[in-house]
Length: 289
Image 1: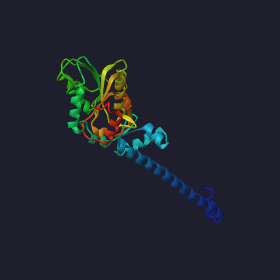
Image 2 (image 1 turned 180 degrees about the vertical axis):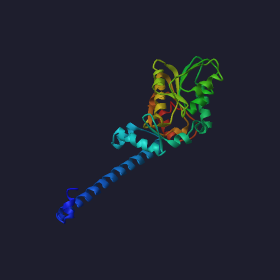
Image 3 (image 1 turned 135 degrees about the horizontal axis):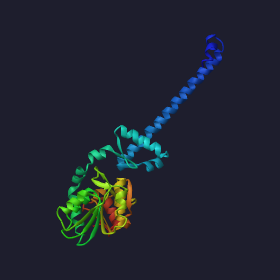
Image 4 (image 1 turned 180 degrees about the horizontal axis):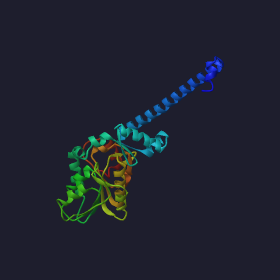
């Protein structure tokens, strides 16, 4: 451009200068259009991510990468941007909505469908007899269930110190082992690979887990990856696999499948009518009590 200025100023090569300036304008326009297209793709991706979070409560980097046809690094950048804007909270392998933590605290979830959880807990506890061994995962329904366990000797393995306290405060005969790992304040539980590895050589009579959803097509689901891995391992290591859930969970999906319905021995639920419960019950009536 500096070489052309003398020519332009002298009045020569006006045609060359005009064509060059026109080319620059076109290039500037193309760059602007390209930036706008990239920005629009980012906006669409982020909107897609937020819609997924609204329906599922949690998303995974790998899942979003496959659905949107972009790299995992691109998804991680999108999630970082959304976290900085206060719309999501990044977790290991994905993200959850901020309001899921704020509005769905452990205390608030304890109060949700509490009467149904009490009925479920009372019945599920009646399945336990002296000298049984149990896996119990961490959730509000299993915490209530733990409060109704019989005052006999049995052995429990759990990743929840709340459940351990609940049992030992009422029954000194019970032997309770708390599985170690990284403590998650939101879920009031120890989670992670350390927790899972401690279960490798433990086989129990029963596994009791709470779930985020039961779907006739997708199976037994949870909405948190880390909790899901714990529950899946517990189910694999228990002889009698028992699901505790109220009827609001029937027909609900989730982020992670932890079991086929066929592999579950007992589903303890409440008596409320629910069209999804009835559909599943028609197929798996021998499992639901």
